[in-house]
Length: 466
Ligand code: GLN
Image (cartoon, rainbow, N blue to C red):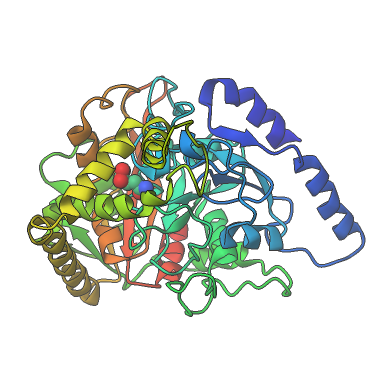
């Protein structure tokens, strides 16, 4: 009831949710009854979980922030949502996002713009801006987002919450409305590293409905039938035992992420966090990822190409809204013209161009080659270091409208995050300080990047750090 009333109180200003469930109290009651009957309950018992609206839910709309899916009600739950429910979590509602996850501010949602709880004249980041704002304002406890090029990590940074992008394949994509399938991954938001880790362990694991989901073991060994392990206290006691709890941990600071184009306040805050890691016992070194700056163009070519293919299914026949038209071609054309917003249309055009005969070699193929270079340079850096460090974004949250008409300025804000998706690696973003701005300052996020399937290490380091 407390969460619901806070949600409703903040919602007129924040607009984090596209849809709020009517069943929250009923579901909470039934979990309470289970506890009273002495039945086992899962680690998310009674926890309110916000779900980004590009993740399918059977009893609520799933719009992906697009008019094209305005009236779409999926006949199934995404695997991640199914698992949240199996762990006795309660889906509180569907959160706002940039249409199909394309954007960095939530301004390209077809329905509403979400505000940043730290300063409502600023963007919460995107595309999972609704999920980040909702946790930041404590409208829910934790939330699910998706991260194709930074959409969990950048909004976590802008809203001062913890955001985790898992390894590609760690979490099933079944029921995640596709943007760029080789990059998409469902991720988690929480107000602490421990909360984020509990949610991650709930949704992780192989799923026969997603052939790219991995058979690697669960992250934190929590299973539904087990009693809830008190792993938070385990983490805390481990941290308290030693004066240098991270002794011997090798941390590589990525040189290219602290060079030109990074806001000076962000840079000094992140460097402050780096010295804190040193105090905790880490061994620091500077690492260079020579192909770092190529990540942005490669990402935008690959993501647009994949999206131009994925979005061809919205033809007005199979899904969602259908325009009235005289013949089939007009029906396709009008449904798409009316259903898609301008950012999505631009991506489809860019992607179709990059995949066209005659241009394919120069753009798509080249971008794939760059992707391999980036993967290799991360591998070298992570062979020598346990984790890599960078800012999560080159600036703190900016004003609503500031970059709306300047797509290049907006795209370049993704420089810190896209490389990680191209390499398929896990990364944790956590608040590490503030810069000036807004009524009380604006949060800055620190990004920790780990080797594939090494989320456990990121969570441990993050927990000790925070
Ligand atoms: N801002 C990036 C884009 O627009 C990333 C989006 C995402 O991760 N879904 O493509």
